[in-house]
Image (cartoon, rainbow, N blue to C red; front, top):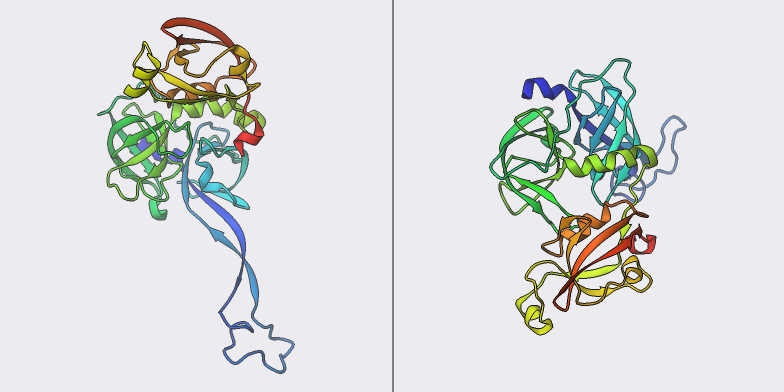
Length: 326
């Protein structure tokens, strides 16, 4: 698999123009101050423009040159260079980027069809499944590491929508944006983060989420999220006793935003949401993940428990307000 799939893994090199003064002296590099006379052919030292280069990984998802990587790999760069394992070097064009999911779609123009890694299903992964990572840790191109899936649905606290795959496959700086591959040779995750204080703890963005976002990134260059307008928390034993709740799991509504979709649909404080659009909600972390990637403008069903009674209401989601995103 490593031999077959490595040609579809690329090295992503974000480039940024920065100004730097050579030396720490007030008049450039001279420790003696600015000379009285500078010959015409000699220019005094001063700010210089040069390109600062970073390192990351990515992989080709279509033979016409579409590449997936992490948004943080190319964020704030002036240009992006893509290096193929065959030695080819291309200028990458940013098609779309989503900072919340940490996903970016890049396009290169190649005269020949490019090798591709097929996208699999992260939903079918189970803890203990073997996986392989290919990338450029510390700039070391086409490094292959292997491990297992340690857990799924991990949150690192970066956003309410975190849903990472945890793996003990060695992932290091430079692996970001590279593929996590199952034993069928399919991408199941995009390697995204490591935990500096923990060994054997790497985190990958589920490919099923990436597959949802790719069409919108390709068409609009960004992702429009949906908004329900509630603040929720997990149910505690104290909540269950004080509020006399009839369920142990779900998203307990603590606040409903005025004029939000939830407010207009009739949701109330202390309602317990147990199902959203046919998907079971067993904790407060799952609800935002379900809401945010459901198309806005569509009517969806919410099953909830209120005062011991189970009911279903219909709600029409709205696009996430810009003021809340920021």
